[in-house]
Length: 503
Image (cartoon, rainbow, N blue to C red):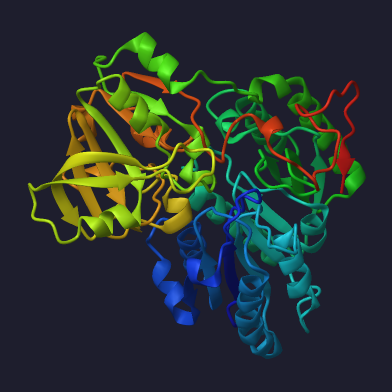
């Protein structure tokens, strides 16, 4: 008996639609054909799928896997280039015979023209000759904005259940397990969804606390109690995407009809609405926090600035925390700034030399601008490192090998600054240790993140303070000029009776 042939492809991007700079095809890391199979073992969702494919005895037919760091709207031409490469490979594979399709997606990708890039992709895949009736499964990021179109064209998309995303690989393995269940039983499930009129900024979506803690517990309990529910997804949504269906969504994978699934979705929607206020966050300025805790606390103490959250698309070059450290005379401070121009400026300098260099402040219009300092060049490197924690949130995005681009470490007075050439989310301590920096040695550490850093930093931190700084990922969602978002939605609008939209 021939093994099942599973067509595999991946397209992963979390799109911050309010950023002016577009995401180009050259910004994507692209892996083609058999090279995709080499991802087995890199702890990414793709690796999880490949490991399960081997265990189930599938023949994987790889096509294209493309992923880019969170950033601005994807150029339409980039999406079309991806589709051309996928179609070129999928058509002959389908003609030769395919038993199912598996896709690694994010769920919050948008192009300049397409609000729902994943929905468009799924529809195009379905339209290929031989694909209309095939089981179509896949894996999603917890921050996806799951749309009605996605639910229509997919049979079984399974989302991460943890934030930080320590279970990204496991979620892909779970999705692959459901596909095997489908192949074994001959029963093909479908998806049902529900949009809740709620927007939560990323800092309000950690799964260690409510609202997401109770919602994910409800999802797990529902799966355990009702065998008809193959999977129950709780999607926190991505609030920096101005699309009609952005926000909190719930979805089920089941062979039962929508009438059977709707009560489960209603319970989740009612719980999300009940807990809506717990997902809203408001932070003091970094100056207020430093004025309260002082310049030399018993550290490490984290100054977390979600407004410059690299993991949500920010440029990672905000100067708010650096300026506050300098103003307060911090003696053991540590920050990372993404600034390829500053790294290049330091390229010809001897280690130990002193020079003046302007750093950061170029990526967001409300930042005061570059900070010019006299610094000592401590080290330079190619900027590559292996994740210390294979369950890092970063593994869900990039696998275990991370490239920050050329880097330089400089010191000014009591502050050490890691300058990178590629914005790198601070989700693993290997980022600093690979540069000869031990984070435990510092009293104050600036962290450009919202929640995903906690897996790495919580074990070493004596305290964490979320602070307000200038940046494109502000938790004040009312400050964004939404145009396409379906209204009313909490907390932007007064709502007395929420409308749950089912698909």
